[in-house]
Length: 314
Image 1 (cartoon, one colour):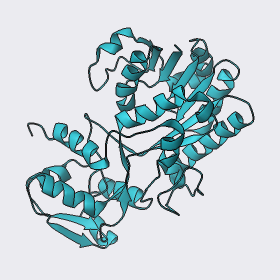
Image 2 (tube, one colour):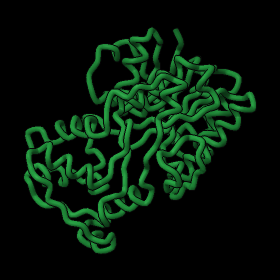
Image 3 (tube, one colour):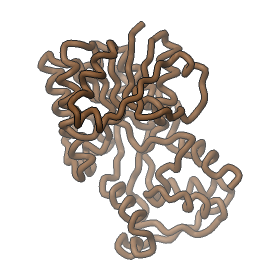
């Protein structure tokens, strides 16, 4: 049994991860900014200690890393680290004091796809603050780990899906009206030919990769693992599947991106560009062969569960 502290444990992944760890016999401390509840109830949370800590404020004061180290955990899971200075601060405080740091990264470290399905070791071309910073973070942490420093594993989720929020939709953004329109059999316009890809993952399967990384410590330390569904899906294929799920024949129109963007809000068009400019399609072979990862959810299965909850009584 290990003592595990999760920074940001009441989010979507933590909703599934914490019960997994408790049921596995571990002692879990959840570090959170407030008294937020997990997305789904589970009796396992009765056995979790919650420590209230504002990461931004503590980092400004220079105390965050020391406070995390003082929890006395064997394993730290960092769900919410987004810039290299934050990662360095925590790593310096934890070095020599824990047996395993698990950093939750993102498939966006790869930027646009060069080869598909993209493997963890393939060349990266990150762009945008989020992808670039996450890439810098994992390079730093994995370099430290491989040199015999802080033992670290990086888990790279795709577009996380689960009950409680609007999934990335077939138009490549997060406006839930797209699902309502598909439900009602209304036409849907897609950018270009709808052939760009997105790669979802159920929060439960991300939790599975993290739990397996803990269980397979010797194999996972110093490595990064994609945490995605077994296959990516094109926007067109996604839209057609959702129309048919709601009992309609697909009604799709296609426009060049610039023309399509003029029919959308700036926020929605911007989100779509961010996703289709990357068009992720990632391999899970490394996690499957080294950790025993066996995703429970396909992309569409995970999406349909989320949309069922999203549109319930609406």
